[in-house]
Image (tube, rainbow, N blue to C red; front, side, top):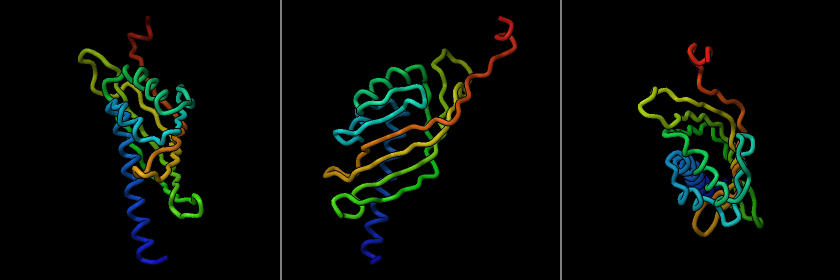
Length: 160
């Protein structure tokens, strides 16, 4: 591999990493306009393993907006990103696959309740990406929720 090809790969890896970070920020901030913009025109997301839906970016953004309104704090930590570039029409690097683990603490909306997260879940994302004229975009997002910890019940809750 030449230095020019290696540099192009590094630039693409940084752009792909930025897109994944933008995805997490859009979900955490509830910015559904940005969320939809991160996808290709035919991009899809699948949240069924986390109790959600599968559909195009607009459908899923609507579902997320409604579902996540229960939480006044969301924070996606997307780590252990493994990036693999693929081929499209015999041009190296026009597609990418990213597999990454996530940890997602969330706090239910309340009036001055405890500061600790009420719900924490974790799992793995599989992202499919496509290079477009606008830059890298998500063609597919699949969530594989592996675990979930719900709020702990207090002894007073157990008596009720």
